[in-house]
Length: 144
Image (tube, rainbow, N blue to C red; front, side, top):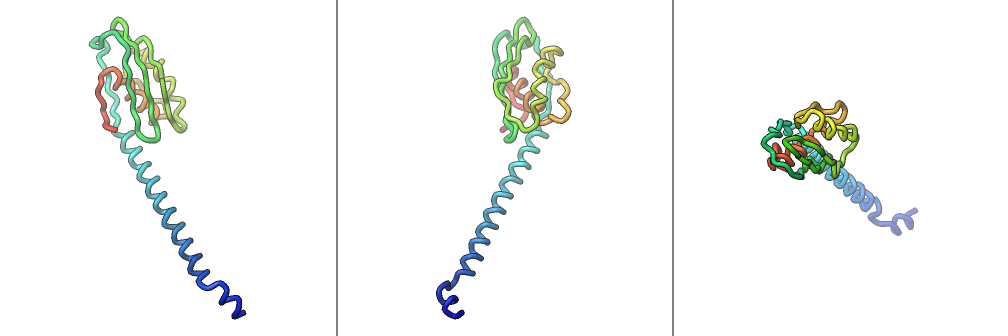
């Protein structure tokens, strides 16, 4: 028995150090993810959808985007004769918010940016609407 102990000196200490290292890494990753989620929620809450006076927008093609970390969107908006005639969703990175991809059609039908968000896809709705607002105004209601 004493021969066995002499052949593996310090092995329990190495195992303890490895376990401590794993715990420290797990805590660091957890803190990072928690911070990312906290910032995401703060950025989504900061989006205040505003309407745009379409009659003041010149005919043309406009591009806008919005990125709140976990959800982002890029759009192309076409204005002709003081009306929104086309909205192309160029990019939409989302979790479960694909239902919000119907919003461009709703904006065109109602000719206003501040349409209702899609239930269950609130963050994606706000991000898409903010992207359209940014395209038409060149302004941002939140700073990413």
